[in-house]
Every structure is written in C-alpha cells, then in structure tokens.
Image (cartoon, rainbow, N blue to C red):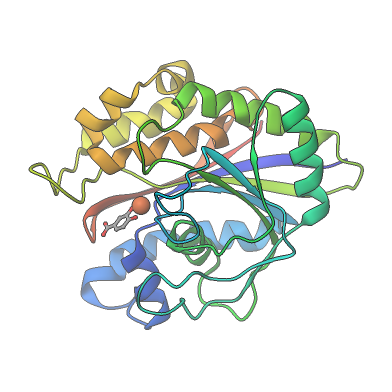
Length: 279
Ligand code: DHB
Ligand code: FE
C-alpha cells in the first residue's frame, strides 16, 4: 500500500530557481542559503520517494483572474514548466502520476472536497523551485509529482484549517491506493514576505521561527492561524504558508523534525525549509 512517510515545507522564491539555473549558488549572496539545502538534498537522495505530492500556488501562469480554482489537482502525465514572462525555466518536464492523481480526485471529491480537475497545467516557480531546492540541477526529476494547486492569490484563499483537513483526507486516501508507493508531500510558499504596498519588505523571523517550532510542538496553534494574522505578522504573501497546513495534515500524528534551515534574505523573502518524518 502507498504511504505518505514525510513532509517538506519550503519557500519557492523565483530567484532561488534562477540562481540554480544560472550556476550562481556559490556566489556570496547565495552560498549560505544553498549550503543549508545540502542536507535536505542528501535526505531526498537517500529517501528515494516514488511520488511527491506538491502543494503549491500558481502565480497567474496556468490560471489568471479569469478563473481561480481554490484547489486544483493535476491529473496529467506531464506538466511543462510555465513561461512566466521570460521564457520557461530550463528544467525538466515534471512527470505526473495519473493513476494516483485520479485515485485522489475520485476519493477526495466523494469525501466532500470539491476539487477542480486539471488535465493540462503548466507549472511555475511555485512548484519547480521547491523541486530545484530539494533535487538540485538535474536532467530528470527523481520522482513523479502530483501537483495540488491552491489559490492564495485572490481573496478569499482557503483557511489553514481547511487546508489541514484536506491534508488529513489525502493521508487516508493515499493509504488506500493499491500500489506500494513511498510518497512525500511538499507544502510550499512563504515564509514571511510582502512584495507590494506600504509594508513591502516585511520579514518576521520571530513569527517564522515559532511557526516552524509549532509544526511539531503545538500543531493546533498553527492550524488555527487566521488569514489576518498571517497578513499582519508574515506580510501579504506570508499567506502562502496555509499550504504548509496541507502537508502537516497529511502526516501521522506527532511527526518529528529531522532538518531545518532558515535564511534571510532570499530576494524579498525569509527562506525556510523543514523536513518532518512520521514517527
Ligand atoms: C518572491 C517570493 C515569492 O513567493 C514569489 O512568488 C515571487 C517573488 C521574492 O521574494 O522575490
Ligand atoms: Fe510566491
């Protein structure tokens, strides 16, 4: 049977992807950030997941204000890197897992989670940068990916609590899949950052640190964080962190933290990475 064995929370800053693509990771600005990614990449190589469910947000690449799915599940066999205005990233095409994705779609919808089903979905930095962070520069991604796209762009995004409940349902449903698969789930986005408006540049290390501490120490507190608190404490784009709640919900109770890295600044963002394993 399939099992979600671990979760990864990570930022998705586009400039991190550009640093990988253009071989700048050893430059002064980036070195400390990328040095901190090495143990996570080693973990990824050792764990060899078959599939990564990547909970991410689209930044007006596949979708736009014309159509805004709250939750969209990618069912395709392949997801091409999106053109975000400067050509698609030169990274491998993301290979899907249609069978697991359809199993999730059917059971999530019958369980009360009314997903949008996406048979075509170019994936932007929200998904490909977390892959670059965990896998480095590569000819081929080391595992299949089931993309789960969450609206955190246009008010109202789903609550952290709803995201957590979706994660719990994903855990149950993956466990009912007939094939034996090792599945990791990524919750992406964040941490504190604000890209626009009067408070552009907001970083809140105390909020981010407590958030990471409480993923294991006081999960109910982070599940209950409301939109207004994310906005006030972590900036307008800090709301992306609700996607980490899907990851948390998809883990067994009392996961343990096996790795953490936090670095400021990465572009305009406080870059955070955490790995949680089921105990
Ligand atoms: C940055 C961060 C993001 O999350 C994003 O989607 C775009 C840009 C940044 O820090 O520059
Ligand atoms: Fe973003």
